[in-house]
Length: 115
Length: 113
Image 1 (tube, rainbow over the protein chains, first blue to last red):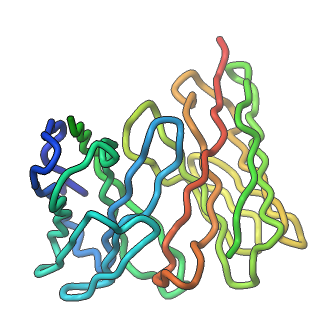
Image 2: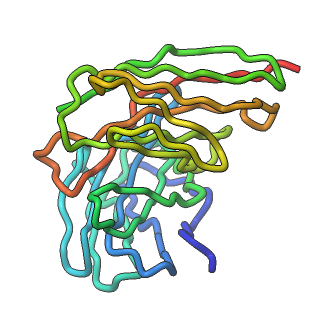
């Protein structure tokens, strides 16, 4: 049981390049989400998904696309990288509890630098 | 939307109890309080959550005031490995739905030998 796996761990891009951050979970969780964390700040929600085929925007969605074709995978796409997207990205997943509580399991993070 | 207020930093002596406060005066009746921690630059780790009653698990205890406007996370015997940033969280604004969690800047706890 690997939990939430993110790849790559580190990536350097040039401005204008595109790339995809991968996120996979093996816990059959319905809910998945992407956060970014900038130095000295908390995590900010980019996009989230409540199940395969369903995605929605979070706090800071501009410049990012997501899709959820399977329960296991939730890739985050940067269409045209900008220096402002230099950050550490975390993927998280959870299952929906009858109580309504949302207990997230996080991946180890992907550190992205845009030059 | 409910937000939280935490002190930016705290110190605690190794072996003593660490009491981390959190104010969430605008919390609504059906919103949970969650606590996570982040060690270095690792992914955040879930600690505990609660609605109205006090909760305890193998990691910590959560004390929620009767009016639910504040809570305290208690690490009963802090160790050096508990040095981390601790986040107190309530649900994000309903406009984003799905019980998304809003992470503030947290409290940086330093456990001192």
